[in-house]
Amino acid sequence: MTAFQFGFMTRAQYRRDEDIPARFTELMEQVRLAEKLGFVSFVKGQHFSSDPFYEFQQMPLLARAMAEAPSLRLVTGVSLLTLHKPLDIAEQMATLDLMSGGKAVFGCALGYRDVEYKAFGVKRGEGGKRFEENLEAIKQLFTGGPVTMKGSHFELDEARLSVPLMREGGPPIWIGANADVAIQRAARMGDCWYISAHHRLDTLERQIDLYKRELDAVGKPFPAEMPFRRETFVADSREQAIEMVRPHLGLKYNAYHQWGQDKVMPKGDDDLGQDFDDLMRNRFILGSSDEVAEEIIECHRRLGVNHMIVSLQWPGMPQSMTLEAMHRFAEEVFPRVRAGI
Image 1: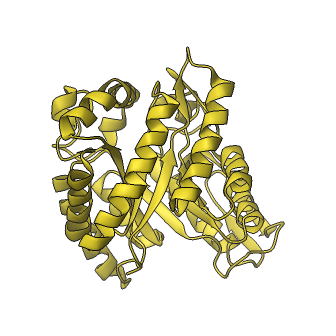
Image 2: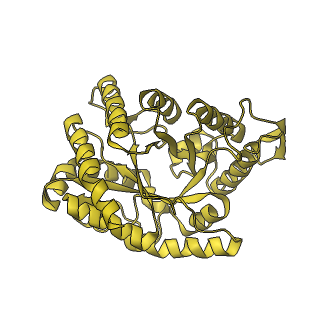
């Protein structure tokens, strides 16, 4: 296992009454600060038609962040691979990896929203098959040689990447997964399972056992790098942290509920529309530095994770609040976690 590390994740989603050019300037300030504070990675998710929010798109934002903070690893966390064609995504990832000096990580998942599936011509029920075909094609393209492969929605005829690969096998592949069957797929096809922020810890503990069993079944070791994402905030007390993030984190999870995120979550942990006080239990890490560090150490102990992707900013949150949260997390939580592991 590698040493415990921390990454900084942005959704880059904002309320529609916000000054979006100003938010972009602020986001680049966050990226520079993340590098300065010792975060090792910058992570950006992907959605399209993101009502009720505005959202910056993944690949151009990661490329710009590379120029702002060149030491950070750049993670597509996640690319909605089901919606795309494999040669396009493989070329983009290989280019990002080359431009960053080998710092790109390819995080991918199926997606779940009807508006996205319809816009990209994906029928309900075929997402899993398309994802697996796309990922297999990308893995073959990442070998560097010409690839001939016919899928249900693409055909590669002696296709090869337009840029040289920075490393054998291409960028690492993190697979985001919510449902049990998707976690088994992550074990079979990915370098690791990129653990969701949405699940309660008890759900993740059950699912990590499922993941380990599937790894054993296919003869793969537990990953040296095991990333997980949590919604996190540090304040003087748990009560203060909850009240500070409630309007912003609550707005984000209300949108998840409206989008249908909970429909693809496991039974018993599939209601993101519940009251915030119920929603946050065993799901969000909110509190004082000591409380937050203790919960992260508990995640490490119970799940075996060692790369925490931190979400510290949500729609409508003031920049001053985000920057203060980043400072407190890095300066107060980093050392407590590392001392306790």
